[in-house]
Image (cartoon, rainbow, N blue to C red; front, top):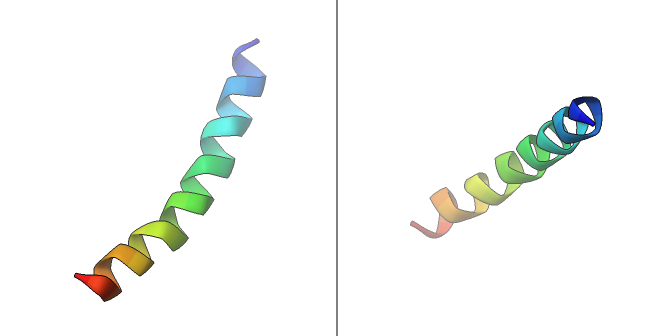
Length: 27
């Protein structure tokens, strides 16, 4: 099910954006 995997990647990408912002703020 590549479609499900792609959706998971998109969701993870959105979450990682917030996570990376936190990591950048903390250094």
